[in-house]
Structures are given as structure tokens and as C-alpha cells.
Image (cartoon, protein in one colour):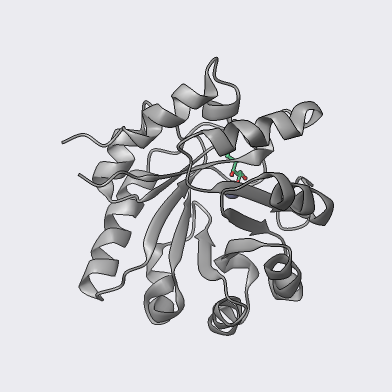
Length: 220
Ligand code: DX5
Ligand code: ZN
């Protein structure tokens, strides 16, 4: 039974103790550090950018999974690649030339991710599947951590899995928003490969144990 990849979201970390939080991620079974960039335009919130990316790169040994919730993300791809991103996710809704943008991410040596808002159907990806390494399904409306999981996401994952299989695509399915030990088994069963978890990890009594539980949440 393959284990899912776990990507704790830095947005929920305690920034007053950042080095400690990153050290915890280093010691954990996490596979990535999820890095949420918000510009106050694409989403109604502003999070963090390059100074924090530099710190994360310096102290975190896990690959960085960068989620760009920004307009015109193509303007910053090079900077995020140089800053140490392993995966760069752009939003479908923010890209006029998605095919070109995804190709650019790969040319920069990163894995290309495309994120879909809850209202965006899977079908919009049909003609760009070959350019995608990861599909990031938003299970909340992006902009804030700690929101309630939208149940319709499960159907979307199932549909996406079918689309990928039918097209022999090796793209991975990542789910982001309101993910925790309760819904993890259902998400994995539907076809998810990577679970992003903010509050359910960093606000847990024992974050290391929370990550371990998510890592082992696939049911036979
Ligand atoms: C939401 C962000 C998420 C967020 C997840 O816009 O993209 O990555 O940090 O946080 P939780 O897991 O707390 O919903
Ligand atoms: Zn995110």
C-alpha cells in the first residue's frame, strides 16, 4: 500500500518560533513544506513572499511546494525557482496562457502544478494535461487557513483521477484546505496523492504525531 505525500502548510505555523517549526518539519515524516503566497488581489488576503522563502529554504530540508495565489504568476516564476521551489502551482483562474506558463515552470527545472478553485470544473484541464505534473484541488476557497472542507471536493478528485487514468497521465493529485485525519482516508480513497495540512498539523497538540497519522491514513 503506497503512502500518501504530506505537505504541512507553513501558513499555520507560529512565526514567532519559525526555526523551531521548520525543525519540527525536518524531523517529521512530511514530504514537502507547502508555501502559500497570497497577493491581496487574486485572494482577499496577503501572506508572505521572498524573505520568508529564503528562510524556509535555509532552514527546511524538505522540498518546497509553492502555491501561488497571485494574479499574473508568470511574472514571478523565475524568482520562485531561484528561491528554491521544487513545485510551483499557479491557479488556472489566474493564467491567460496556462500552457505557456506551465511549460515555463518546467523549463525552470521545477515541477508544474495547476490549482483549481472550488467552482472550477476539472474539464478545463483536458487540453493541457501533458504540461501538468500536479493538480492542486482547492477544497476551500483560497485565501485563509483553518476553513471548513467543502465535501463536493471528493467528487472532483474522483473525476480527476478518471481523467488522468483515461489519458495515461502520471500527474499527481494534491488536495488543499480543511484536510485532517477525519477526511484523509476518504480523500485518498478517491484518488488523492498529496495532502496539504495547515491547522490540523501546526495547531495539533503533537504535530509530529499528526503528520504520522496523515502519512498512515490510507485504509486497505
Ligand atoms: C488556503 C491555503 C491553504 C491553507 C490550508 O488558501 O492555500 O494551503 O494553508 O490550511 P488548512 O489546512 O488549515 O485549511
Ligand atoms: Zn495552499
